[in-house]
Length: 259
Image 1 (cartoon, rainbow, N blue to C red):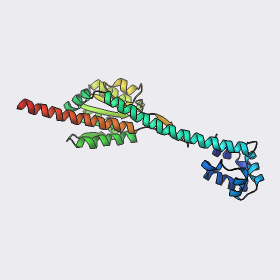
Image 2 (image 1 turned 180 degrees about the vertical axis):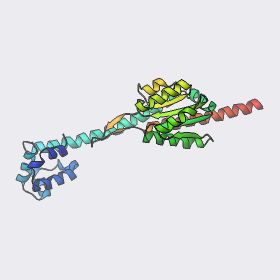
Image 3 (image 1 turned 60 degrees about the horizontal axis):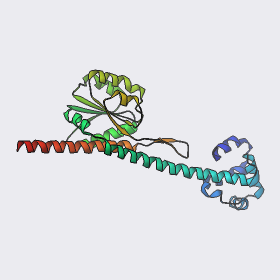
Image 4 (image 1 turned 120 degrees about the vertical axis):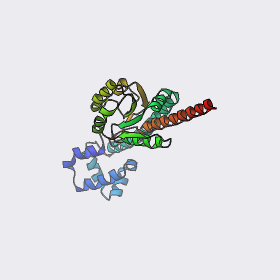
């Protein structure tokens, strides 16, 4: 339990003096536990007994136990921050390792033979990744059509053929609203390249061409959960660079053949 939760739980027992002390504690979490009871009383301009009574109102036997609680909270926060960075680094390293070992030749051939390439992202971050993919492909004269909403995807669906390619970017790969459209595309023989988290997901199972990015969920010290998404941009740029090399090699081969 966090200090904020304790304050909410015992709020009715706290007086104005208590709130004044807690304001100092909350604004100095990382150093407050290092203060003895007399030092904290001095910092807050209150008596030693006021600090003791506050600790007891919050359910502690005395100030020593309250101080240990504050220290534990600060250490837990630091550990979470370290784990957050470690998880992020691990996701990026695993994604890079996957990208280095993955043969992109099949997808490059598919894109090169397509008349039109559409990219669809299932959420805000996924859509940003789609636009970044579009921006990079413009550098080699290849225009990707970004579909910005599921409704737009449904509108485009009747006009898609087996000569087109649809790249679908989904964090989980298990977005329910996507499956009807995917089934319809598969039935029409439209090739789909899925870009999803590296796990067992329905979108990857439904599509013949799959790319994966490592993405882990991390709980921050404030309780908010975040997912690693930089790994998806790594996969997007890796795809672009492989395709750029593929086109260059193909052009060189044609020139050599003509000579």
